[in-house]
Length: 117
Length: 110
Image (cartoon, rainbow over all chains, first blue to last red; front, side, top):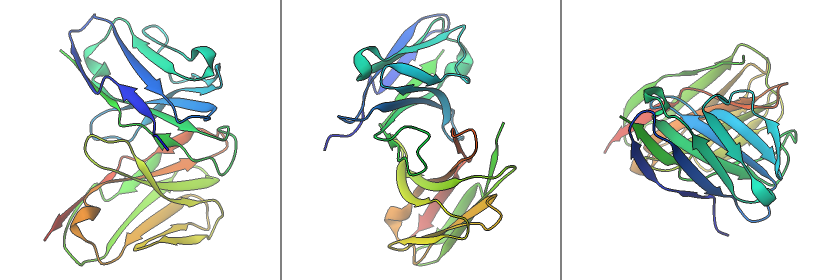
């Protein structure tokens, strides 16, 4: 079974530029998550989708970050404009069960490493 | 919001030694998870715990869900070089959002 796919794997941009990340979840997984992982820290949830609807975006900096999951499969996360503090690894995860299920297991992709100069 | 304190931040051990790390929370969790992350990869689930007091093993790994529901620990017995990596605890409480600890970086001297 193919895992969660993410692209690009690395991205270097200058501050105030825009950037977009793409995620393809495991086939059949209805729930998709985007996490931000700053160097030396654990992942922090940015947004959770259930099919193509947003379940939780309370920690997404909406003035510069946006995400969508058209058709309930692939998802894109965009940052516009980027700031220095956005340098981090952006992880996508998916699961078969909704986030409210006690035994939900999230499978993570390899992440996109973003460096903002 | 919910916060997890994971310790130690890093460990330097000899191959064959046992390892122990733990996480504590400021609030009650209903689920505790332990992940391992290698450089350039996403976290991989090692052990999941769903009940207070639960003790679960996965090969040389053993984890426990604390009775107070505010802590969990992970033990690795007889460490080998491939155990090197960063170990994260994660918990899910009433808010249902998965919250991660800061990670424990494990280094093993052969």
